[in-house]
Image (tube, rainbow, N blue to C red; front, side, top):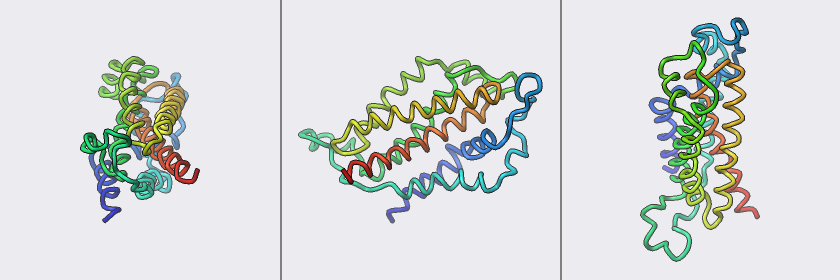
Length: 216
């Protein structure tokens, strides 16, 4: 019963919300960009050969499930004197990262869209997202996520929530810049893989922070 929420969120992401994430990270990491014409050849972001690494694709698909299953289930009360009034907004400990991680994944798309430019042969959707992406928009969505992560991360240890959010910001930014340079610009694959990196970074940082709090 405890694993049911983790499996449900994993399947929902795999089938609906983040079905591009695992294939995209495989294509971006496993396939070297062609350097002809200063970057990718047209349509390379969707090369069938990019999925020719089944072990890497399986690992990228299964990793989120393993992290979901490792999420602890701490006490679920609002810290401090406001607990009686705010518990309605403070879900059980198991569900907090289940809520936060997909949202961080969506933020990863926004962060990637605000870095660099669209690839000359990028998909129309990627062009639209990159045209709308700005640093201001990235930070504008980061601030409420930072606050929510501080509140939801670990009971009475809001500093760890801040460190988690800043770590996700740093990792996602470094990856986004690196992959955009490697691929010669942003495509749907670079955007989707950035979302995957943001989500995995959050889950790993959350588990490390929780273990640190309860072993200190």
